[in-house]
Image (tube, rainbow, N blue to C red):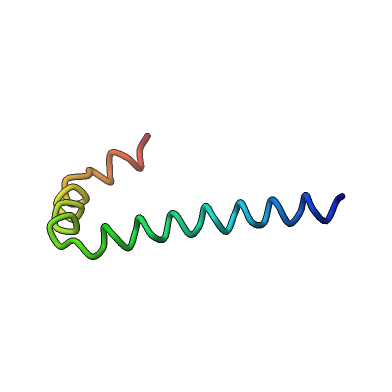
Amino acid sequence: MKAAGAFSQTLRRYTSLNHLAQAARAVLQNSSQINQMLADLNRVDFHNVQEQ
């Protein structure tokens, strides 16, 4: 029974990772989304974030 639980947990992790990879792939293939992410990242005040 312990092995089945471990297998189930591993399967859940791999499924979650697969969904994350598919979502990231879709975003990274869209140049307008990449440009928007870069613009957003350039607006972050990292000095202020670091002080928090």
